[in-house]
Image 1 (spheres, rainbow, N blue to C red):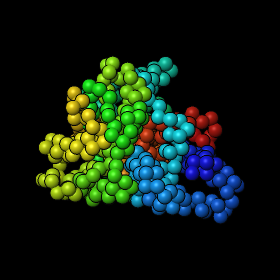
Image 2 (cartoon, rainbow, N blue to C red):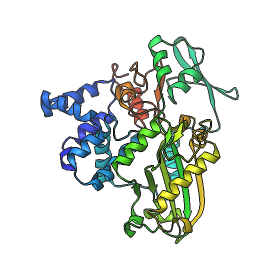
Image 3 (cartoon, rainbow, N blue to C red):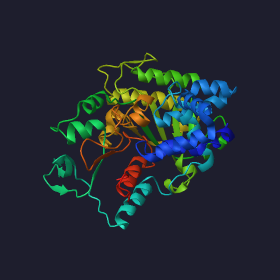
Image 4 (spheres, one colour):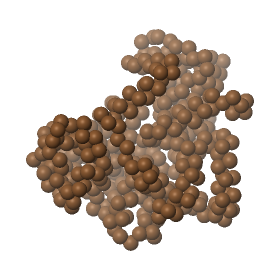
Length: 405
């Protein structure tokens, strides 16, 4: 499977990294047509839209192989029955096979420190605790920003807003007249499922029942099979708590022992199949109440997850020294772009992806105002740690060609 996909991986990553509103996107299409032919290009279009379940059932016979690959689309906000989930599964599978599972030594904060260093080393300044309350518009151009404390900053060249469409157009640009098609697109932009994070400190490494060597794996997906994954995603989409959720278990100390004292271990658990508003519980145990993620419902669901994981990690209960549970409300409080706990800042299904991200009116990173650009996970090429949207806009801003500017 990988050998077949690697033959056109440059086209796959080119599609995900292309500025869809510049000439290089057309050039990529021409390259694909030259290599694949017209019929091959049309067939590739169908391949791009295929759901993971159909592709996995056609390609593999082993339920284990299917269950191994199917959860990876979750990390791009897609379920296995969603259009394009097969393509995303192949992309992530190839990335993991070729690049492994890189982990920054010393913790994720080191990644942040490195990015800060890039800015300051090049003469930039970073201002924290400075909430932007308003983007100032003058003569059809973005001219600067006003902070919540009244301070103002002038932008001579450009402003890049890494926000959701709602935060940008309804809040930062409140009072500005929008073109009707943009206004409609902002109104219909929707968010995806909520995330939950559980962090555990362990007194010893986990004892995996299936294979002790699993303690040395950076990420393990725990699920019954591909059908349980499909059920839990569809349940969450309809507002229901899954009875048997898919559990993403991160084991960073297996790669970077410095993250914990000698002999100790840490786990992070990521759950991506949670409703933002609870309508019911497939297990019939947790009362949805008013549908909010209060502490009682959050802790009850976290207990379900831990109990399910204890089936696989036999010493999980006895080795746990501390536990922190971050629900949808806590996650949004940490980052306002993660509305309702959606870790991807917007539903990632095909009608809100590629050409149609962030808006159905297909404006890309441009906004109706000169000098104002929209970037972030809500925009193309979507969520992730690659900084793709900012990179694409930076290339535009630094282009020396008149048509590129």
